[in-house]
Length: 100
Length: 163
Length: 340
Image 1: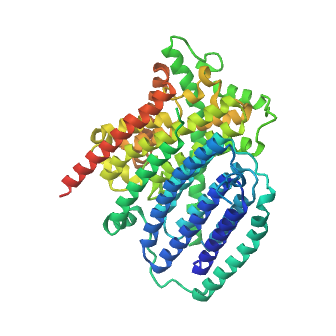
Image 2 (image 1 turned 180 degrees about the horizontal axis):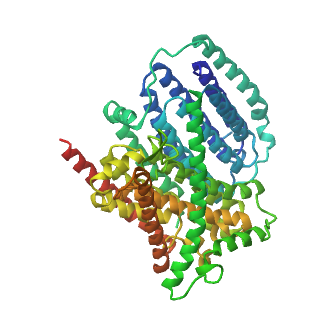
Image 3 (image 1 turned 120 degrees about the horizontal axis):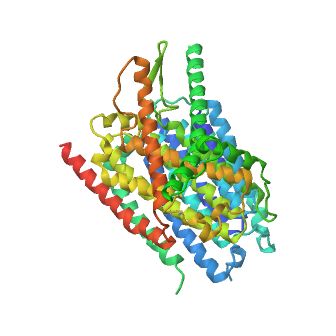
């Protein structure tokens, strides 16, 4: 059987890659995809724990995370479309007019 | 079973690297689909049958389709790094290494790799997960349905063209 | 023990080969059947010269496709342009792996079920593969870097994801009655009465949504010649175009198989005779029912005009979805009332 530490290690690597991508990338859609990557890493950790504690509550939580991610993706992409229509650019370097 | 997990883990990590490093958003989206599908198979290996299929149907089959459609609509081009993002670029990778090091340390301390599962294997079939959802977690279930409704309304209002 | 596992592995391999060969042959001859039936509906003969009654026409078509020039426009995104038809074709073939064709056959003491694998979430697996099938279309439209394919790809993928909901809702009633998501169990619960008599609304919902999912007339605006040149497959030629074509027909076969399993009792039918005949007759009944659905698909294609795109989307969201929800509500009330 796969040790829990290995599952959590995979989850940590995916989360770290998502976080790094979130900080480094400039295209707003790619940043959004890195957020989804982080959410999936968390889902994997939940399912790993659910398996090792013999408790299905972790899987129910993953279900809710997926549902909330779907709602967030819908609204977030609508916001991106609205921002693109107003500013004409998808790079967050051009979308920072609230900065000093 | 165990070697399959490591193959899938390697595939997921390679695809995640591709998501983060690709210049074209469309290739990042395709790589993210690969990550999602390999994670779905990992869920299957860990006994979460229902969630594996739900992950493919909803995450890979609906949310990512939304991403691909938006990329097609907005004609997202290749990303060109500008001078203003230099700080983020030079700070990103070292921060990642520090962060990962911390997590690995904490995980290895708390759950050493020799831990054998003490609990019996509970297979998360649709009936088992459904019973939990509709008995213990019925309130969050109803609240998330309201959440989805609000999200749909919000998305329609935000993305509508001003006539 | 290793001998047992080797034997079961060999059985699975044989089944995979047989099913794939049968599916590809069915796809090839579905094209022939369509041309003949549509021709007769339109008072003409259809393919007549190549072989008796045009039966060698698919062979001639295959040869033609192989010898055609495979040109790739210069501005396409090469990786995705190459990936899209392979993705569409592969996904269309994958969903056949959970479809049961009959009960089982016993050869020298070993019982081999007529199914490559029986997942206990088999129905969800088919829905998952259908959801992934949208990518073949969307990516083909995007990678072609040209306006007709882009529009066709956008419209087609929007249509497919809209009708996926109605497809799912149509089968929820069947799942509630059978109490299981395994395709084999759903068929076995129909030994008293076929589900089409218990869930007529569900069947109509499922079939209409299935026609829209497979991009067939009357829902084929995204690939209609007079509207969008070729839709998402405009820039494709030769082998890649053939793959899209075969993927479409393989999807039609899969959807027909699912319709017979969920609503028309799958392989259930009169069985008689010696044990070998008893094992093979259910497969014959299954194939007969699937053939009837194929004929129905082609009959609809030859008869109905095309929906306009906004009519199509309005129909899917404003009519089919509410009807599906009401069907689920009514079915769940009846099932709950009967179980008390």
